Structure formats: C-alpha cells, structure tokens
Image (tube, rainbow over all chains, first blue to last red; front, side, top):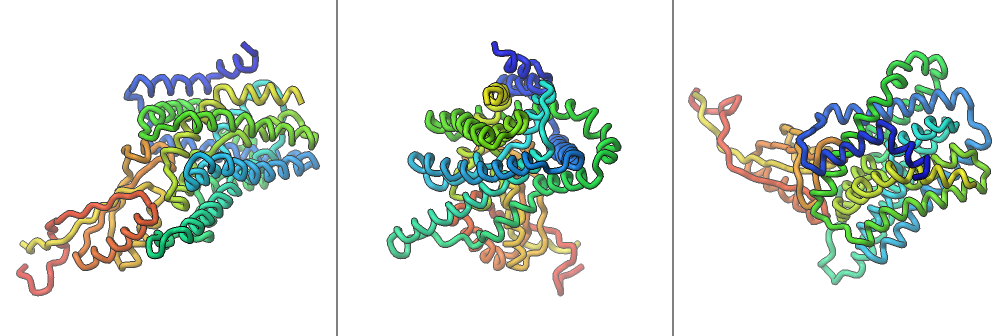
Length: 332
Length: 106
C-alpha cells in the first residue's frame, strides 16, 4: 500500500471518520448534540481563518501567491461551467446547475484535512491558500443561479401559453448574492482571516491554546460526526443516484484535481500550494452551497446534490483523494 | 374565566434556509407573532439530521385568524408552485387569550 495512503489512514482524525461511518452503518445510537456539532464547524472555520491570516501576515503575498489566487479563481469559474455541460446531458437542468454549483465550490473540512496531511508530511504551504479557499466559495453559486435563470426563461418561453410556472417572487440575484456573502460560516471565515492578518504573529501566539493545541482533537470529533452523517445520508436517502451520478461524484474530483495540478505546474506553484489547489478543485460544498441552492434553485433535488457531495465525494476525498492528489503533486 | 377564542394554527415544516423567507412572507401579511422550533427528520429530500446548517429543519407555528390565514396560504401556494419544498399544516384550535375579547365577560 502506498505510504502516503497508509499514513493518511492511520491519522487519528481520519480513523474517527471511518469509525463514524461504521457506527452509522450499524445504526448505533451514538449522537453528537446538534449545538456542539455546529460549534465544532464554526470553531474549525475560525481556527482556519486565524491561522491563514497570521501566516499571510508573516509571509505577505508573494508573486507565487498571486498566481495561486488567479489559478483558484480560474478553477472556480471553469469547474461549474464544464460540470453543467456534462451533467445537463443526463439529468434535469436544475439538478445539473445545483450539482455544478456544489462541485464548483469547496469543502472547508476537506481543505483542513489536506492541510493536516501536508503538515504531517512536513510540506510547507502558503497562508494565501486560505484566501484562495474563500475566493473559490462563491463564484460557482453565482454561475449556477445565472444558469438556472436561463433555464427557467427558456422553459417559460417553450411552455404553451398560460401554463408556465409563475416567476419566483423571492428570487433575485441581489437576494442570492446577499445570502452567499452574508452566510454565517462564510462571514466567520473571512472575519477570522482578517483578524488573523491584523494581529499577526502576536495574535497567533495568544490564540495558540485555542486554535493550536486542541485543533486536532476537535477535528477528530467533527470527522466522527461527519462519518455518522455520511452513513445516514447514504443509507436513508430516498434518491437513488445511479451509476452516472456516482461515477461523476467519484471521477470528477480526480479530473478537477488533475486539471488544477496541470495549471499549478504551468504557473510554477510549489508542491504544497499545488496540492491544496487540487484539493479545493476536487472538493464539493455540502454546507454553504446546498443551503443557498435550496433557496435559489428550489427546482433542484437536494437528495441529488447533497447526497453526491456528502455521501460520495467527501468520504472519497478524505480517505483516498488527499493521498492521491499528494502523490500526483509529487510528479509535477 | 375568560372565554376560549377559536383560531387557526398554521404549522410550517421547512428547511432552515427558508426561515427568513417565510418570516418575511408572514410579516408581509402583518403577522407579527410566530414561534420557531429547530427540527430534524427525513423525507423525499433526504435526511435532515440537524448537525449541519444545510441539514436542519424548522417548525414555524403561527396562531392566526381565518381571514389572514387565507392570504398567507396564497403566498405559500405561490412559493410551492415555484418549487420551494415545505409543508403547511392547518388545524383548528381554541386558545385562552391573554387579553379577553372586547365585551366578553371577565
């Protein structure tokens, strides 16, 4: 077994994820209280932002950092575009737009796990990659909402007179953008990044007992909860994804990661940054984007986009994807 | 004892993401009183475990007159026809009012 994969699988946080999946599959009544679970996810974002901001304050934004951010924005625009084109041939256009938005955005937890993996392998990465993560969260949402609006307009024109569904009263680009940019988790991440940057090294040291010493433990606990959730979602979801969508959820992350690594190689990014760019491109959002898509593209089926992102892509990336992308990044 | 008043209880079961939208819908019809309770469950959209913000439901209870209820139901019907997935339950209730109706015996 490749050493990177083995090393990843014996990480306590990853093993707790596997344990959580096992506990969920055997229908254990193990349960993390919802309020604590929500605190964990906010804590992880806060710690991520603070550490990223402090790192950015220390190193500044070198030319390589600017290139990494441009590559991130490029991937954030490309992935939803071609995902929509591929999916639109096989599933409803609204489902296609929602899945494209999900896969065009990022998973903060997958990013955090990848950062831990790099630290375990003593591979450095820039604090600007947290900024890259922030930049990659929202473009896909905007693109998906625009695509869904186009589809609605097209369907309304094609429908016989008087039969078209009424335009959604609550839907406006302004409302969607407001939701996207004021989402609590998203805002906390940005705020923490700014605070981490402003307080720099001194702030990082002051916060170290909170964002450093207990970080791995809380990550392990959170991944335990995610394992339980993945198992439940996969077992109890009434939507049967089918081979095409399961194949998309497994193969598209690898394709996106490969494309990101090719871009990173062309721009001359360091290994750590390249690998994180690959992970960001390969991950799918199951918190911020599904919440916004449910509101902005209500015609889409949550059982499709949420189950794909959480039930298939997330466990794949956590268990196999991260070591795979790391191995691939070593080849460039 | 103040007499019971007959009202309607509107119960909405919806994803937490719709909470602000639904409250705005109620307030548009001058419904100022409601109670919101976090909820979990499962349905055609999948499991709502309550562990993530994107994975939680809410119950919104509204005590409302028949006349205002009809207006709110029209708004909810429009949202549902637009694709929003939520449930609206209507039941008859009798409520002991905080303030007795004008002219009623104390």
